[in-house]
Image (cartoon, rainbow, N blue to C red; front, side, top):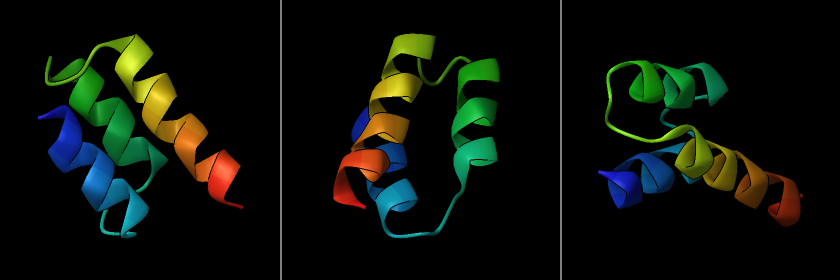
Length: 44
């Protein structure tokens, strides 16, 4: 699920709120969410 969320976030299909919702649903850990959100910062 991590790779799917990451791919969708980087493609702009979901935002930071969507990543946080994935944590709430148990699809990601908080550490994985931080990793995904950090990747976007590196790209900018």
